[in-house]
Image 1 (spheres, rainbow over the protein chains, first blue to last red):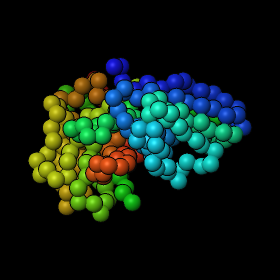
Image 2 (cartoon, rainbow over the protein chains, first blue to last red):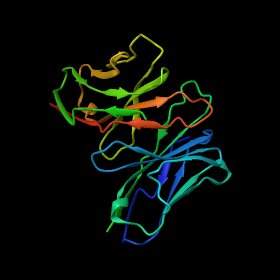
Image 3 (tube, each protein chain N blue to C red):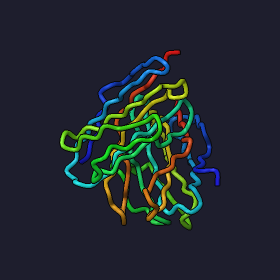
Length: 115
Length: 117
């Protein structure tokens, strides 16, 4: 397994457009997290999946954001009607419940620029 | 809510010297984990070292060690024999213990470490 992957790595879009990002976690990991990292800040939690169930969403996740994890495998994060304030790095991480340390492994991120 | 504070936005150290990065946190939990993550430029975040709050012994990983002061809610990272490859953003992070639920990470704002050849 090559770790957590994210696609695309970079996305430039115009304000008002919809964008979708994909995260492929480590195959045996049942937990998946999305974080957002703006310039000069640490990552902030957005949402959490255990298998296919989305169990928690941050208040940072407005109604324009939606995330899915069909069949408990890959996950998608969609942003509708993008705004300039959505420009950030979107990070995905996965972990295995019950593992010795529940370490979260991060993907390389998708950098979104909204013009 | 838990918070993590890193008061040093930037640090620099001469190659082969030792540097200490500071982190403080606030929580009402008694059991939790603390982490230091490294984020090299344009590369993904990797775990450097972790500390379980119930352990009094400070964690060490090769050249990396921590000074964990639970009562003071302080968690500093010491890097010995600094190498050019250590240059990166370093994030301190907190995670509650929640075996059956969301174990999200709460991060500080990071410290950019520069290694001077």
